[in-house]
Amino acid sequence: MSTWTDLESRYYMQVARRQPLVLVRGSGSRVWDENDKEYLDFTAGWAVNTLGHCHPALVEAVTEQARTLIQTSNQFFTVPQVKLAQLLVENSCLDRVFFSNSGAEANEGAVKLARKYGKLNRNGAYQVITALNSFHGRTLTMAAATGQPHYQEQWQPLSPGFVNVPYDAIDAIREATTDETCAVMVEPIQGEGGVIVPSPDYLAQVREWCDRHNLVMILDEVQTGIGRLGTLFGYEQFGVEPDAITLAKGLGGGVPIGAFLAKEKFCVLAPGDHGSTYGGNVLTTAGAFGVVDHVIKNNVPAHAADMGRRLMDGLNGLMSRHAAIDQVRGMGLLVAVQFTGDISGQVVSMSNDEGLLLNPVRPNAIRIMPPLTLSAEEVDEGVAKLDRAITRATAD
Ligand SMILES: *Cc1c(COP(=O)(O)O)cnc(C)c1O
Image (cartoon, rainbow, N blue to C red; front, top):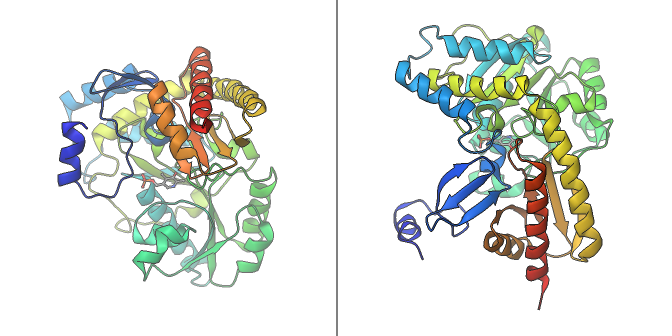
């Protein structure tokens, strides 16, 4: 038992299910604990460390900015905020951006935009259709959007105006649409829900339905955005252009920032309608610019796609040797391994021991979301460590 885990149990709100590891430093795809044990990190801060740990593009951008100017409020213009806005808009199908501090806040902003659009253009419509098994964040309003009882039941009453329907089922969206509907918000791939990949035409069907009924199509790309699926944005994989997207996790590569972007037609928010003290802060936008600029200039998404294929091949190889593996699924570097039983806790514990960090996304599934910059050798090393971890977890 570490002094730090003892102190945490005494002083911190006991809300996190943590692995018994105190991490103290990181570099590239690796982190070290307080005993200097090394781990290959296939969690990447929950799909956040786009360029791995302490990448110079992020460290230098933040360090330089910290020496220059850290916070101003949005009462003034700042250069990094404008540069990041231009970079995201010019590399996406969207026309304008607003920066927030987290994914949940980005989604809240997108929903406000959709509600105002509905008020102005759809006779006051306000309802947002979201998916069961989704994850949109933990504010009270995003708990209502998140179609999972675990995130909702204890916090009643939740914000009204959300309808949760089955994912990857266009008929469910059609049936749920009424005169009160203003938007549909879904993830291109459900991440926290266990890496659920929809059928290839689902998002195109949502696109068509939203066009037909003048609904705002919002894609929650908080987890899939910035290269994770093998393209800069997840929507590119599905051949659709959404009306709005939200970003967070990979956008800052480690600094806390979120964003929502929308096409011009949907940019109905006016001065005073929305805002944030820290949102678009100089330090975090400078860091995020460093990350996204590096991602684009070095075509990191293409590397992620290559490494994703290699990872998938390796995991499929494991599946042929471990009866305990039921399914391997995902896209790019967002992947899940599902087991035939509820053994993800044991697998993660054994992989900690082997020096590989994994996320037990479901009792019967682990999620793999490494830095997008990991090497082919690191993919192979991770697969070999997972192989040993599964062997040990299933031996008795
Ligand atoms: C993580 C996540 C969120 C919430 O982001 P926070 O920064 O934790 O508020 C929202 N949507 C998706 C798809 C996510 O993966």
